[in-house]
Length: 78
View (cartoon, helix red, strand yellow):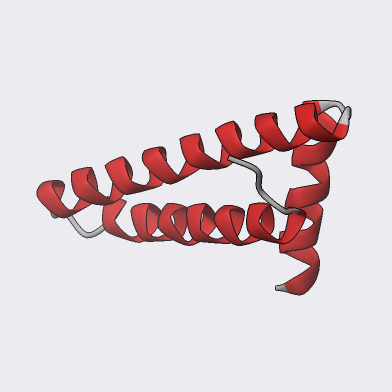
């Protein structure tokens, strides 16, 4: 599936938000909630990785470069 750069940025934002939830739950002592949040984060991070890989291939760009640009775009707008 083709993803626009903007879609990649939104996917990265969702993964980053899920990671923040994991970090909060890590300190709250609620193992089931932490495990669920960790799984969500892991799945979203994998989706980002897969989408970036496809996008980079379609654009003829280096995957690492696309990933860096996506992360810069997420940080810049926050």
